[in-house]
Image 1: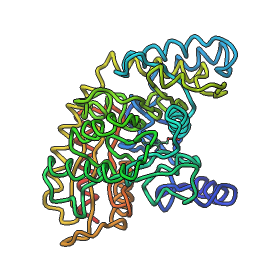
Image 2: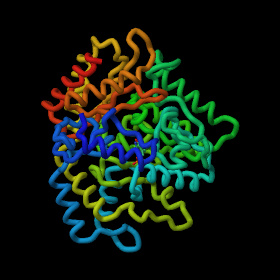
Image 3: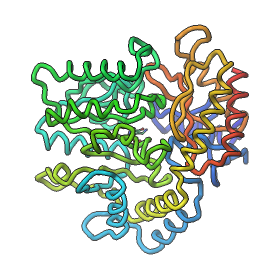
Image 4: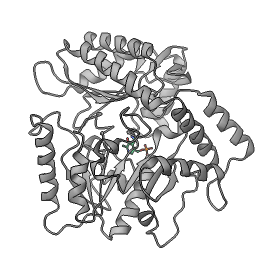
Length: 431
Ligand code: PMP
């Protein structure tokens, strides 16, 4: 139950902020502090955090290394990243370029994932001289006018107007519908045929933008190699591949540092975009692109706050912690155990349609028992029940929000995974 002061804050929130700014829970939570994998609300209630503010808390809450880096940089200078040399920005760009897998990589920093994707669209359309884009059905790429124009998820497309001509491709989801019963190879062949069909009539798209695992779409799992197969078709026509790694980057998927690496047969994408976790809650986004693509603009383009020193200091400290503590390996090990544990727990819950995902990016798809109908009401009810049990999780999905999303900080311990799974199991059984 939320405290009177948080309830009153919610009243004020509703009067002054937009109606479409969605909050979780009937009584929204006011978080006051965090530590490790835990957060506390204004009443002092402690929660195990299995969502990290939509994957923004990448390593851990209140990580001393990150806090120290932020406060030391803030004590020296808080500034924009433009006009003058920015040492932390150059250092973080060097590290991300080396990690990206993209040859001759250049990095441009923004303040959000949306702005990162906007930049990728600016580059791709300028490079190719085309404003036709390929995007995936059920995708989410951000909230700006152009990002909404490549977002296939109807729940997050508040306008049908767009500066882009977008063609939506099958492949992101196969939980239901005609593709659900296909083998991986058949599914990939069907999606490639769909792509080839869209490319007919002499169309010359600038790029395909895709999330390797759809995040907002419900942590769906396309078969490995799907984007490599797409790549072959696209590369033959000069169409660029932009991998939106806003949720799948930084080792989140355990097996790989970037989501695109599950599709690596045909090499790295032409561009990748990132955001969320790298700042551990500080606002960092960005694009990595081959120099030829990054440098195709023939006019200036700056982001006043993208790459600002305080956010870059946070990013550097956070990335160092991630690598030094092999949190990708931890995501693989602990995520693997958690997936097994959740699969076992859900086997006898009739409302569970599918338990999926990799690393610490796991989804549970809910349905009306005995049918294939998505059950958004149950997803909302499980979220409430998990909260009552002391666990924060997320939800997502396509046409209906019927998937639970689990994405804890990557430092999750085995004991915490066990504890969270037990709370979730109780919540699922209750609902
Ligand atoms: N791309 C993906 C895959 C995302 O999940 C999101 C955010 N949910 C964005 C882009 C947009 O990022 P931001 O909210 O930082 O603008």
